[in-house]
Image (cartoon, rainbow, N blue to C red; front, side, top):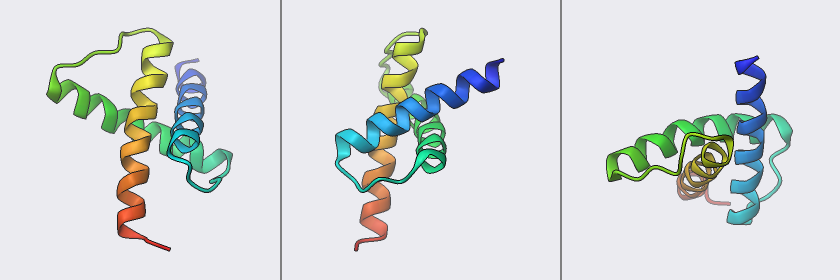
Length: 81
């Protein structure tokens, strides 16, 4: 059950991050992967700064979205079109 929850939160975080960053549509699978990677990256960055957005699902989605935005920014720096 936790895997399904992680996938849903990852999809929401990836979608939110790509919507805020105004990138091109990556599709559902890439949004999930970006959200999961972004969540891990977001928790690492915000944890290093001493910031916590909470332990509930909304905090997880927002943290994942912040991480996804950072990951999208880094990807666009590396692979400019």
